[in-house]
Length: 309
Image (tube, rainbow, N blue to C red; front, side):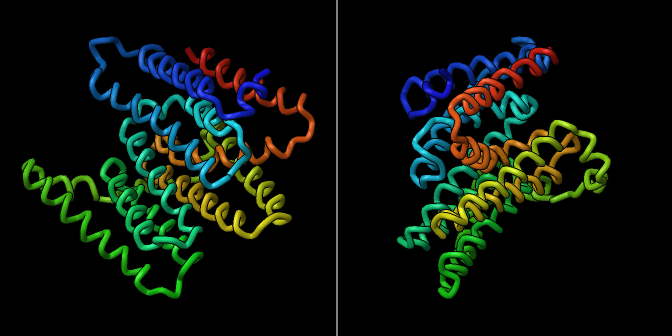
């Protein structure tokens, strides 16, 4: 039943997920974080919800435009379910905003494979990543993804590499101008301090989170599975999946650097995780097995969440 609903991209799929995400966000704020109406900033929370909803649309657009999976709605389903697995992410509005701009960046980077307007796409992707860093300074590490894309698709054109200089100059000029107008020039020093909390790098802190550890292990296994399957297919998709895998690795690195709880910034890994999960599901030949996995993917996170409440 669930597989039949989400086997095709239909407006009803978006409606179901949007309504669920809206209600779940409210549930998390009121019950998981134990906040009252008076504690909530309705304006900022409304903006976060809108950003979440738009993120779902962007994820679906990226998947369909680049044919990262089949023509189904499993991608947006699992993107939504990952918020149920990690409800802590919904408390970090900055991470959600940052992730939104990173999605815009990866959208442009993946379109470089057409080898058209490469410099414009590099500029757009670099600029979106810089904007993302306003909300999370460590997300600037995704610039490595831009360099990787240049190296993969057109490394011999030196002008492609120089585009990033213009991105940095443009971003810093605009940001500094805005900060001067708002009399907040101290933002640059206070925000972009890139402080590393070395205790976070202690393996005991990382592995203390069983849920996150299982999440990482599952994604690593699924990533290997995906690459093994793609080796039998075209080279083009393998290259794209390498960028997706690097996206995931950088997300884990950022996640380690920004939070002592190692949970909030995990939202940066949701998009690549969805690609790995859906590619595995599409490899299943037995419809009953697929249906059981879909049911378990929905029921288990919800049961765990409500058990915590």
